[in-house]
Amino acid sequence: MERTYIKDLGGKIEGEVVIKGYINVRRDQGKLVFFDFRDMTGVVQGVVLPGSAAKDVAVKVRPEWVVEVKGKVNKRPEKNIQKEKQNGNIELEVLGMKVISEAHELPFELGTEVNLDTHLDYLPYTLRSDRSRDIFKVQSTILHAYRNALRKHNFTEFEAPALVGGDAEGGAAVFKVEYFNDKKAFLATSPQLYKQIMVGAFERAFTVAKIFRAEKSATTRHLSEATCIDFEMGFIENETEVMKVLETVIKETVNEVAKTHSEVFGKFGTEVPLMPEAFPVFTLAEAQALIEKEYSRKIEDTNDMSPEDERQICEYAKKNLGSDFVFITRFPTKKRAFYTYEDASEAPFSRGFDLLFKGLEINSGAQRIHDYNELVERMKSRGLNPEKFSFYLQAFKYGMPPHGGCSTGIERFTARMLEIPNVKEATSFPRDMGRIDSRMSTEEE
Ligand code: ATP
Ligand code: MG
Image 1 (cartoon, rainbow, N blue to C red):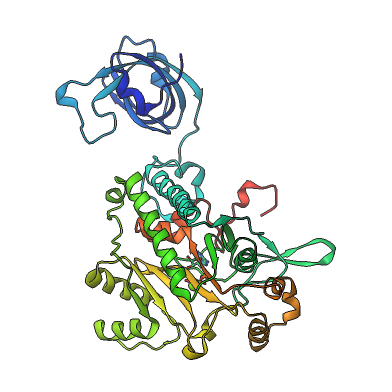
Image 2: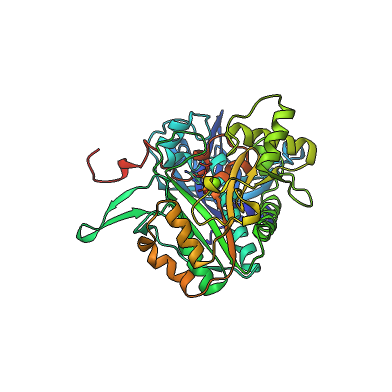
């Protein structure tokens, strides 16, 4: 018999079906055995009656065993209907059960709240939990919707290399790799330089890229390997055009998540993010002055936003402006990457910006320098040798329009969307200073 997906069982009342999936839960009640079966489309309750041919198999199967079940779809009596639950109006009367694959003894019950390290140590198992599957379904929708939104705005997707000959950000700690013929190579800290080169080809380009950061940090927002959605666009007047596209794309993405996963926000104790007609924009100076006034504290570092500054300006914007998103602009040029544009009339401030979401930076962007001579001068003033960037500089030598772009980290975006405290829980296989799945390889630890 052809397999029926669990989500479709409601349409087959009184029918005989075959489902395939996992034992999610097992409950023994006297002579009856109840199961929750799980497949990729959902969960259904099954019951094995004392006379069932499935009885012998049913006594031995345990959670996470993989089974094929033949059954009859019965309507539940009115008093047993659970309206809010998927398949809450039906029950599968189990007529036969075949074991497809057994599971060893489980470390703990699936869905048990365990600390983050234990959760991560058992990822091949814990990724099956409702919570994890919700997180990564949302992340999958974020990726899909973000890509779609960019395509609608005429951006062309390209693949950026992860192995590079130099460090684009200059400053961010970088992982060194042994390359051929004693050549040094690095893991890319950003696809930035390649993205700018692609402006020459496509005018509007984007990439979903792995970035690698070797900072020895152990925070709730830093990974050693992250995934960014980076876009770059040509023929702009200034950075506000980039911000406008970003805002539109973020809105479309949030709306798509809200539409596809409306039930998820409640499960995580949060709500669909607040997005007013236009996201609030503060200069760094305005934001910090506001924080000093609202929170009666003195800010020491006026060159950048501290994590506490980011939290408080977002709290302020949520309460007073009905927005979970806040743009910060006009950072000092010296605090931004070398390619960041500064207009003489705005010095010493750059045309860079950050987008904060529920208390955390999820995106950085800027208008970039497009003039070859200016870029070479900037490199020199930062102690960088332009000759070492000659490959990149071709893009500017051979004609480059004013352009700008930005980069969103999908782990941070996902984590803030569901108010998950640690970005690692929103990373399917996180890498940090102590974690790189060595138990998956033949290397000695
Ligand atoms: P922060 O100052 O918060 O450490 P950053 O300014 O160094 O971040 P960018 O270089 O601006 O980060 O990278 C663009 C985006 O990529 C960030 O806004 C963030 O969403 C994501 N990102 C960067 N580094 C990391 C990291 N180590 N872990 C997780 N996400 C990151
Ligand atoms: Mg940044």
